Length: 320
Image 1 (cartoon, helix red, strand yellow):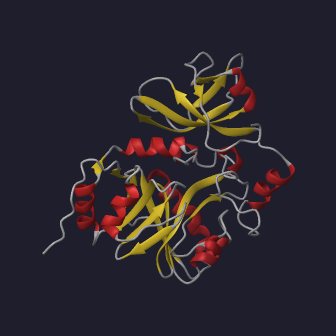
Image 2: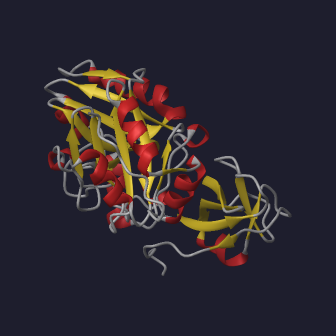
């Protein structure tokens, strides 16, 4: 007899398929060695129980993509990144992976990316998968699934399902969880201060502009990787002139990534929109800007454009 999963009327958790996200697959015995020489995170810390946030940069230190790396099976790894940059990231990685015993696939869509969140998310996922991570960026896996906890409180999870098991798992999720809009999840991640690279902002920022040195995306002890000299020099000898801030944006629709920001009394742009999403009728966003620009007031799209309201990130900036 098939298992029946009870719908809990008072269970406070939601889920959503993440259409904006995709997995870039890397497989082969040299996969981690290759990634160690290319990305900002220390891939020696990756195993089936731990996922890793990281960044891939150009030699000039500009961010090509951000990602969350997890292990799907032995010698098979997946980078979760924005769908609109997957193909470009695959091409860039592909220039160097030809020298390794590893293969990259930026076309596969046989794994689906979902999110589950809310105070009862852990309880619901344990009901479905009989397994659960227990720390931020902790991971667990089983037959056709990987779960990654992306917050410290155990209320936000990403779930990767392969096509063989996803219909059954999705049916179970629908029994227990409330289907929600993807924008609600994206707004939650914005509130968490995790900036994401989208197609218009590829190679626009150095990692420190996006606060990746504060969010665990960069190891400053791992050794060399592409762009490391620029990233390390800024960390040890300098200070980023621009940082990322949480903001409430005017209007009822998200602002496009890369939209220019201006400050009162200035003719030149002082920053850009990184990400934005609508939640409960309010547009929330992450923006990169100069400290002076933030202090004097930020305007969206033009020097006389609507004013942004700056919020509080869940971590401290250098100037705080």
